[in-house]
Length: 287
Image 1 (tube, one colour):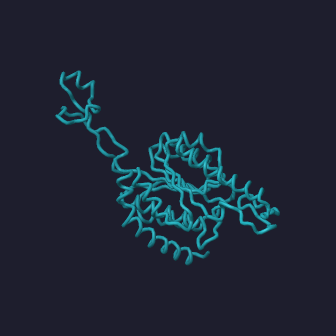
Image 2 (cartoon, helix red, strand yellow):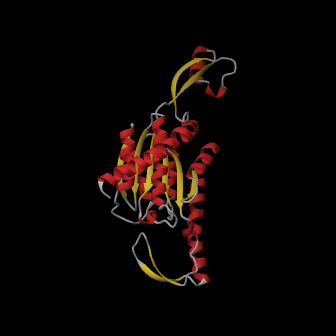
Image 3 (spheres, one colour):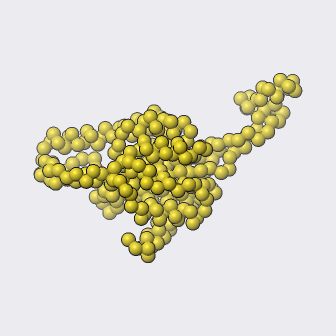
C-alpha cells in the first residue's frame, strides 16, 4: 500500500470512528472511566451528611472534632491500546478482516479518549512486542496510531498475550485504562493478566469471525495455519475432526471469558459482521 492509499484509509477510518466517538462513545466513556482515579486534596471539618468512611482519624484526634478527607477526581487519564497483530488477525470470511474491525475499535476508543483530553499509547504485539508508542495527547498522535494499525508489518505471525501484558506492566507505571484487543485464540496468560489487572483497568475485546467457530463439511481440504504457516490436509468430512476443532476453539473462548472474570477485568466479544458499537455501549452501560 503506497502512502496515498494509506492516507486515504486513515482519513476514511478517522471520519467513521470520530463520528462514533463524538456522538456515541465520549459520554459513555467519560461516565465509565472518569472519577475512577481520585487524588487527596485537603481535609475539612465534618458536616452532616458526609460519608463517615472519609473521616481522617489522625486529624480528628489532633483537633478533638471530626475532619474528613476531600478527594478530587483525577482529570487526566491514560488509555493504552494493546493490539494483536499476529497472523490470525488477517482472517475474514465476510466483507471485513478481523484486523479491519480491530483498527476501527482502537481508533474509536482513541478518539473517545481525546475527547476527554486523555493520553493514548499503543502496544502492537504478536508473540513479542512489535511496536510501542508512549502515551501522548492530541489528534495528530491519534492519527499516527491509526496509521500504524493500518500499515504495520509484524516480524512474527504467532501470538503470546502474556508477553504484551508483561511489557505493559513494565512500561506503564501509573494506572491506565487498557483495551486489549485480540481474537484470543491463545491461553496461558492468566498469571500476567492477574498482575496487570491489579494496577490497570483492563478490558479484553475479542474480535472473531463466525467461520472460525466451526469447520464446514467440504471434504478433503489443504489448510494453512495463519500463525505458523504450516499446511496440512484436513478431512472436514469427518465428524470427529469437526468436533475436535470445535472443542479446541470453544475451550479458548471459555478460557478468555473465565480468565478475565477471575482477574477482575472486563470482557467483550464482537463478531466481525456484528455491530461493535452495540457491544461496547452495552459493556459501558453495565459498568
